[in-house]
Image (tube, helix red, strand yellow):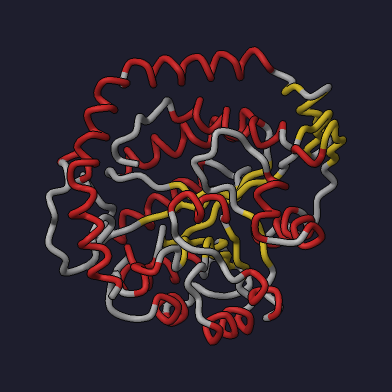
Length: 342
C-alpha cells in the first residue's frame, strides 16, 4: 500500500461511495487512519468526510490509530524495507484524544467511532486510552486476526488485550477474524461482538478463510466487508463466497446494519439486476441518489474519476519504481513474517 499512488482524498472517497450506492449499498463503515500530526490527520479526515457527504451514503467513520510494529513484528530485524515504508509520525495518546474531540465537534452529522487499526499495531497503553475514549459512547471497530502471523506479531492474546481494555462488547465489530479459535468465538459471542468477513480480500491476500459457519453456530451476528483490491463492487457475489444465498442476504442487510450500529433504515433499492448488483434506483434517508441506474450527479462523479486518473498517470513512473523496490525485498520480508508466525 505504501508503494501505491494516493489519489485526491475527497475524490477517492466520493467515487468509492458512489460505486457502492450504484450497487445498492446504502450504509457503510470505513476505517480512517493516516500517519501525521493532529493537523495532518484532521486535514485528511476532512477531505475524506467531504467526499462521503457529497455522495449521500449513510456512513460510520472509524477514527483509527497505531503506535507500534505497523510493518514488522516486534523484535524482528528490518529486512531492508524502502524508505517510503517508514512511519513518518504517530499520534501520541493525548493527541489522538484531541483529534477525536475536534472531529466530534467539527462533524456533528457524521457518526464517528474509534479503534485500533489492529490490536497488534497498538501498545497496551494506547489500547487503554482507546477504551477510555470509547466509553464516551463511540462505536469500536478493528481489524482482527486477519493472518496467522498476527497471532504472534506482539506478545499476548489479541482477544484478551482488547477485552482487558474494554474494547469488546455489543458496540464492537471486528473485521476478518480468520484465525479465531472456537474458544475465542465463544468469548466473542458472549460479549455480543459482531464479526465482518472480507472473503474476497482474504483470497487475494492468501490470508485464509474465515470460519463463518462457526460464527453463526455461536450465534454471532455477521456482516460483509468489501475490503479488497477488486476492480468492481459486487456485494452479493462477494457475500456468497462466504455464505449460502440466504445467509448472504442476511449478512448484507440486517446483519450489516447491526455491524455498524444502525437498528433500522427506510432506504429503498429497486433492482435492474440484483444478482449482479445493478440498481435501477436507490433512495437513502428519503433522498433519491440513483435513478435509472445512474448517480444523480453523474457529471461530478466523472470529474472526480478524471482527477483520480490524472493523479495516477502523473505518478505512474514513480509508482513503478516503488513497486520494484518492494518486489526486490519481498522474499526477505516474507521470511521475516513467516519466522514470526511459527
